Amino acid sequence: FSLARGTSGMGFDGVLACFSPLPPVLRRPAIRSVYGVTLFGLGSSFFCVVLPVSSFVGILYGVASLTRVWILGASPGRYIEEANLKRSGVSALQRFLVLNRSPMVLAFVLPLSRCYQYYVNFRASFVRHMECALGEHAERVERIRKQFATWREAGGTQRIATARPGWQRVSNKNSAYKRDCFLVHTDKMCDILEINTQSRWARVEPMVTMGQLVPELMRMGWTLPMVPELEELTVGGMVAGTGIESSSHHSGLFQELCLELEVVLASGSVVSCSREERPDLFEAFFWSYGTLGMLVSAKLRIIPSAPYVRLRYYAFDSEKGFVDFWRAESEKGLAVADGNVDFEENGRCARFVEGLIFERNRGVVMLGDFAHSVGSDGQLYEHGKWYKPYFYKHAEQIMQGKKPGHEPIVEYWPLHDYYHRHSRSVFWEMEDIVPLGDSALFRWGFGWMLPPSVSFLKLTTPASLQAVYDTKHVIQDMLVPASTLEQSLEVFRKHFDLYPLWVCPTLIRPGRGLVHATGKKAEIFVDLGAYGVPGPVRRGEVYDLVKHLREVEDYVSSVKGFEMLYADSYMTVPEFNKMFDRTLYDQLRKSLGAEAAFPDIYDKIVEPKRKKQLEDLLGKAK
Image (cartoon, rainbow, N blue to C red; front, side, top):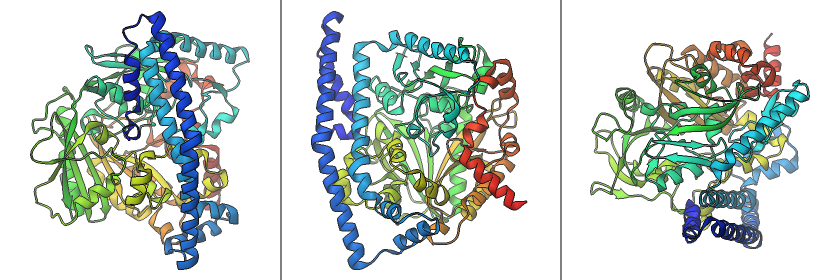
């Protein structure tokens, strides 16, 4: 079960450490041998034990579910879901697969996800002990440059994109734009190159995930100023896109962590950019989704960590009370944002601020700080144990019966558990994927396999069913000024009507990139995260998701906010250009030759099928 809690890499470290005294000529062959034997054992265990057992249990689960429906009848939710599928023209077989997707997730997706996570942990340990990542990085960059040269020799008529399959993206997009692109292979760029604790930075390749980097930093007593939630998220994805978490109110979005970027330009030249060197490229690269150049490494700022987080829960039974408290705590981040965010907790600003809204007048705000030991004012809560309930359920349960004004409930969390508190439930998406996933029986028996890989979930979803989900399911993060939170909550209620809502603050600075504050000073924005099935769909009502989402996008643009671009967007080109400042971006596209080499950001964000839906909608409106 220590493996199930994500420490498999640490266990492998212990084995490989035995070879450290040996000279390199003996150590490396020995490590390769152990690595090969371990991978063989992992594969054998998966195919001979885990997969057969999980498949058997998945079949039993499916039979039991069908028997229950046959004897007791379908639940109202199942009736409504089946009616929605029929209305969408889904075949009988595919309806059956959707209505009974939980057994299939249990039988295949969960064990595959856990096996892949073990492999990633093992490989990270192998590379670290072989001490080969830094030496091989230059060779990998050269291979990318050669691919760019091949593109130019072929006439340079196609646009360049990475060869990473769409199903591997931690997004509901499938990268359909890549079908006509020249694909550059970057899949081997997945190593931590160097960690310099004296100068406080880590240099990593773009395919390094949070699940690789953060445990390695924590092992050394360090961490990132802001750690995005899901372990599958890659550094490259968050540099070219973005990342946010509960420390963003003082540390900003993921771009604020970046000290230097190494980029391959359309010409094939490799350049470094930072706030001092090529500052225009450095600022414009964030949110550009790889349309100015191809990232090959990033230098990130790191800070000292602590083993625990002291987490305080504050209950609210009114929206006004929730908003006023959340905003007051979030805005304290402005006071330390321009200083040293390694600050010791002294009352000026909580290191972590997060809100969850469970219904209109019921929510909880959580404030957290680093702690070097478990204090007497609270209990240790080890959320990383496989049998613990989902975090949002835990937060809701412990606040039941608590009235505003009472002393907060205090818990002490292991730092890694806190960083990935929403991972096991993928926020609250698991509630729809495996409805019984938070039951005690499931947690104790199969909780160790959670979370499911977003990539594997996408891979096992047929295109026809994905088309249904696209019209019945919302995954959106909208950044709006914190001053508009009350109005924004009303807009989300009107158009989505789903709970819980994630309420996370972030600092955004003035600048010239695609996303920046409009004034001369940094501002606090709020990320409103809506994930799940809208209320009207759950009630069986007719619901036009595209229409409602476009109205939300229009509102967000009107208050000078931003839509996170990993999610589906239905903006037209003029609407997109109104929301995002393309001035510097377009200048660099021309001067760097990126217009002829890389797709435009709009074409990467608004995929062909979305454009078709948009054309149909606007055509009907005319």
